[in-house]
Image (tube, rainbow, N blue to C red; front, side):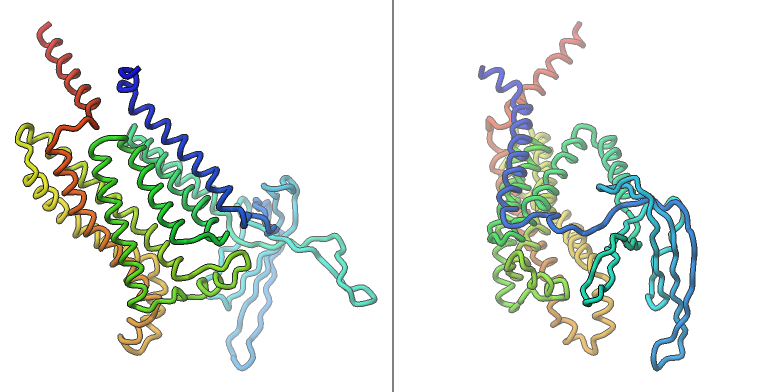
Amino acid sequence: MRVYLKKYRNAIVYALTIVFSLVYIILGNRIASRNFYFGSVSTLEYSARVLRVVDIQEENYTLSGTDNQITNEIITFEAMVTSGSLKGITVTATQQRDSIIAVMPERVEAGDEIVLTYASDSELDEDGNVVENGNYIWTFSNYNRLPALLWIGALFFLLLILFGKKKGINTIVSLIFTCLAIFVVFVPSILSGYNIYASSVITCIFIIVVTLLIVVGITRKGVCAAVGCAGGIAAAAIFTVAMSKILQLTGLTDEQSLYITMLDSANIDLKALLFGAVLVGAVGAVLDIAMSLASALAEVSDQMKDEKKFKKLFRSGMTIGQDIMGTQMNTLIMAYIGSSLSVVILLVASQTSLLSLMNQEMIVEELMQALIGSFGILFTIPLTSLFAAFLYSRKTKIDVNEETSVKQKKKKEIQAKES
């Protein structure tokens, strides 16, 4: 039995990780959604395909006090509903394009995949009460971009498998579980009013453990990466709490933040939400650094053979980490700036001084997230290097299966050459 477990250890660990992840997602969603039900409110939206354009009308008008002429274009078209209970029916809908809007959507054409919304047509009776007459008014809401996104995602997964092979498949599986953990468990838990600090920490732990178990399994480099990543995330959490207090942040940065405070489903703490955003945003970069460093030191350790020394491995880890540090921090900061570039441009254009700009909470929070992610990286590098140097410089039983398989492979090659 023991021999059997050793032989199929990796497969057993992989299967148990998948089962654990599924249990976490299913039970986590049930618990997290106890006070929140996604899709419980009907949006009256359906996907549809444009069959033909029936009519195009233009109306010109001017705003009060101006001489600028504005064009209002109303496109009437027929479309077939392609989702929901009304799938297959043909409806007549309208699209409105007003030149007062700086960037208007493209005019619909036959074959376009779109999203339609409808509202019940109503009228007033003799007593002034609103009475629905059974007719529906269909209007263009947006272009349906989901099919194109699915195709792009499928292409990405295909290329990932072609280049990464088995590792590529493992990457896809871990990515799916990561997204499910965030959107199916973490987000509903926030909307249900659960403690955001605890939910953030649990989500990060789940992502770290499941990603490493699926991608590298129970190996020495996986353990080293887990330890380094845990240390980096812990440092990021501590700095987030401290900096939020020092900078006197409220979490109220824009209209979206204001709308969150007005939700009826939960009383959401914006400071706690900022903590969760920083932690989840940092875990990817920290995990990448820890895994890259642990893997690189594993290769260095193999090349050193019997000359594996703690100091040499630690020094190598710090040297490799310094090279990774520069590009990774640059990437992290640029990612945060790029994600809010439009807002940054608007704020820069509207502020009269650098002092005023740099005290805007939105700018401060973006910079703080980038800095805290960088703090996490700074702590991850020495922790991963230290633990890897300690573990790789000693014989352990963690990678005994891998070492045995390598020896058996070499033995077979020698026997094949001799024969």
